[in-house]
Image 1 (cartoon, one colour):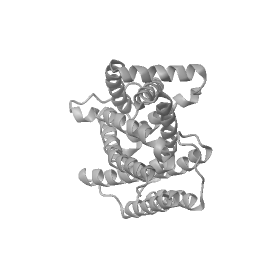
Image 2 (spheres, helix red, strand yellow; image 1 turned 90 degrees about the vertical axis):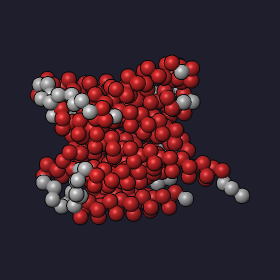
Image 3 (tube, one colour; image 1 turned 90 degrees about the horizontal axis):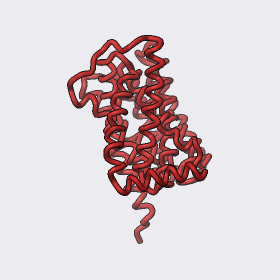
Length: 308
């Protein structure tokens, strides 16, 4: 007899893996745009604002979109959702900012390993506390071991040719990864409350643009305007569109998988995409990076088996 729940969860995980390969592409695009603008904050602000503009044009025009936005407003007004449920966009802003600030120095693969460690550890705690839409999930020794292996992978990735600045930069995607786990949880709750992932996506982008705008204004006050100019290549502005697909899938999948299992599926996709992107652009990861990727995959397998 077919286990419908298990089949649905497997399909959700497969979708998460495939779509999450776009996370590596998003990281490379934001890093390249940041290099052209000579500014790691302006780049994600531009691409996120483009994503928000698209959502603002499409979602309110759809009856389902208007209903979802109304449901979210009602949920916040009546107290069914707390103010902190709306802060997923701040975590997303930190994540895309970390792409622009650190990918150019670390490479997509090392950046991804660091994000994996932060996401896995954060997901363990979030599932334990029941902050995601699927409720509480137990923390087992195997899961803790998987998180420890991920942290060890980051240490391996940073122990090779990276200088002091590169090692310091690993801290940024580590924190961003933990924030990404939080974003996944609260976006899933918003989507579940509204009965639509569209509302969660719009709210996420609004908060992300506001957060990045504040960061950019603070940066301009200290350093002045970016030295670079906006490039003409359209593909350099695609990161926001990729971000929409990532958030939509996350909000749809998390209620079926929990934060940790979704994070693991996302990890698989990011690792596949990261290795491909680095090789495609001629960035040759060090041996320590490949070892770190291997350790991370071992951690994914351990934690995935622990779930069953």
